[in-house]
Image 1 (cartoon, rainbow, N blue to C red):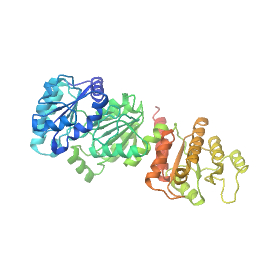
Image 2: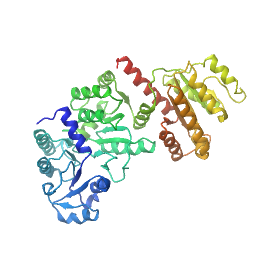
Image 3: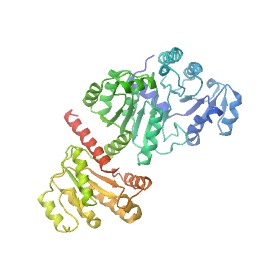
Image 4: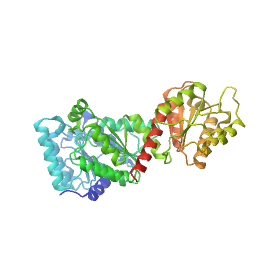
Length: 476
């Protein structure tokens, strides 16, 4: 029984927001990791059960407050999400029990299936695919970390946050890239709505997850880490539909033949020529990035930066040397550092001095007239977008100054439709990464896009401009 798109989305919705959860195969040798991961769900949202035929493993679950059963079918409650962590030869039997139990979504953590290249692994994978397809059972995996839904306490590891949610829905064919993204994004003030590590994707594939996140109300931006796609037609069909609803960002690896050999060994996906991939993705209207940092910055920018298609930029730097570097970096990314209007020039001249600074573009002045300068930039008719450098060291040392800068940025946002970003400098005085991230998170809490350094800021802002320009070109 093949599920329709609507039926698949409905099953994923039920499984990702379950009434009750079961873990099959938790054990001492892995410190009962999956029980610990889902304990947050048990605390506030529903019941958690452990299934293991080895009763020697039951005391460990009992110590965590989780009841034990020898079979999934013995559990008296309905189960919507199951994590399977048993030897690969046992997985088909557990999947069959999940089908009989009426489980909404099954997560197979176990590896050693098709990605192994072994005849036995391929045979076992095909057996669970056939069972799932016959029963209409969504299976995530095998060879993956499954779902992270922080609002529900469904996690990929016990160290992930919970009872919070963000706006980035993330799909990853790699487990380490999914947990890595969640952790790194959180350090920059960006939280996820859902994160799905999909592994081999032999039943629930990337297009199914794109369809789900496209309709998920908590998800404002979709991001993907892809090694390849199994069904290009279905994938690009889902991608085109999703982009009509919200921005989609793709980080695609395996784009050379050498890299493709690694991705095929990891998740069993095939090589697609880069020029062909790039052309089709662009036609769909999605944005491509090349690193985790760029993914995080693009997601932040697309969620809070207004629609922008112009490249004339106004720059405000902390010093003369920084102003020339800032102009160089932003212009290399395709922005035009144009002269300010005569009206802006005259207004700036009324309260700024040329001694020790200037008020051409980029502006290079001290911070005592910060609010006035930012206000002038918001009204300059020659400028499409604005980037302002701020010192994380000074703002960290002076909370009053930090709140004043935030107030100025928010006043700009309230009075102008132009995008404005904060570029965080780690110099003047020099600061460590912890301080930088603390200031960055404070800006993010107020809906102000802030980026560490000129290059990351320029790249993020250009991604926003490219995305919206592409949408206009496609007539969408």
